[in-house]
Amino acid sequence: MPVRGKALLEYWLDVVGTLSPIDVVVNFHHHAEAVEKFLKRPAFKTWVNGVFEEKLLGTAGTLRVNNQALRGETILVAHADNYCECDFTNFLQYHWVSRPKDCPMTMMTFTASDPTTCGIVQLDQRGVVTALFEKSKTPPGTLANGAVYLLEREVLDWVCQRPRVTDFSTQVLPRFVGRIATWFNQNTHIDIGSEETLHQAQLISSRKVNIPIEKMDEWSKEFASHPIHKLIQSAMKVNKNT
Image 1: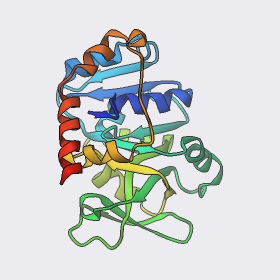
Image 2: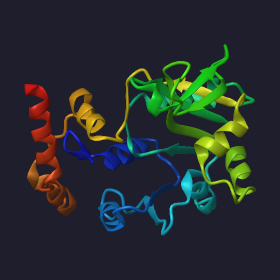
Image 3: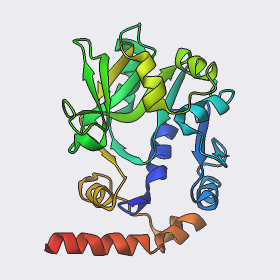
Image 4: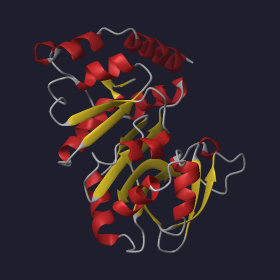
């Protein structure tokens, strides 16, 4: 999925690349050949490891299977179907320096335009999660879980000790209620889960992508010719006219 002509996954890898991580793992399942080809590009092939899941394992299952590759003290987990603009350096600094020390996890939060489609959280005075409401029809607010987390080894160890745990939102997060710090993203955060939100991302993105064709690699040239771009442009024109 493109935002302003650039693949959504590429935005995430560009951000993570600036953080100098030890290891990066991208799990994939749907459109596996396309994702694998994307990850073999020169910009990523030396530091990003692609892992194909023949059967989807859930976020917790993916963490458990890749436990050995995730050797760092702090682990960044991001659902890459979100379009996110934020100060990641500040996010990291909050987790490392300012979060309550009894919290082995920091969750990125944002204000949801439609809270019925998100996981809504309630916090105490310290900004620690006290309650979770996963896609409730009557959510108690608009502060939403951004599905971007910083985890300490304690969380991964807990997951590894429980092979039946697969879903992060419904099985892992409830176990750590009262011990999940939060960091609020004041900028842009959109779940690209529908045509409407994909179009919305084009409108509010502050990033502009204009790479001269002579500097494009083969994947970029092929991607630039994909019909998805014309479909988005057509939809944008319709929305503008209506």
